[in-house]
Amino acid sequence: MKKIFKLLFASLCAFPLLAGCSTGLDGETVHGMVESPIWFKTASRNTIVSHFSEFCDSYGIPRGTSEFRSCVRDSEQASRSNTMSNYRSIVSDINANSTNNELNSLKSGLQTQCILDGKVWVGNRCM
Image 1 (cartoon, one colour):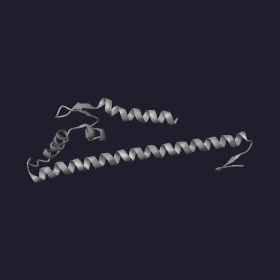
Image 2 (tube, helix red, strand yellow; image 1 turned 30 degrees about the horizontal axis):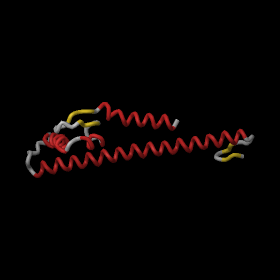
Image 3 (tube, helix red, strand yellow; image 1 turned 90 degrees about the vertical axis):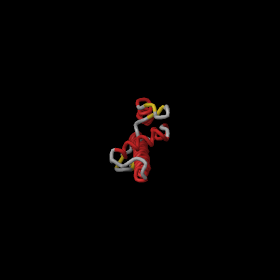
Image 4 (cartoon, one colour; image 1 turned 120 degrees about the horizontal axis):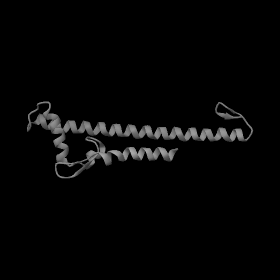
């Protein structure tokens, strides 16, 4: 069961790498969905700045101003922070579920052994 879970997780992680490819402003191959961890790792600085510049343009902030530069910088920082926070949360949930599955499997094994030994499992104990 654990192997199946790991294979499923690996497949889900690989999907954005395989399905979400594009070419950045500098001709680089950019992987993943926009603003995903892999996107930030594979996109050039120009591609990243261009993406967040479009966001700040949509607010009508004039290009070349300190307000525009702050908008681009702050938007990128917020996106990176949110992306990593979401990633850590997903990994934490997976680890917690994996640990719970291992504990449940261990308990199930103990219950089976208890019965095979001719005893009775009561609550959390073999009697």
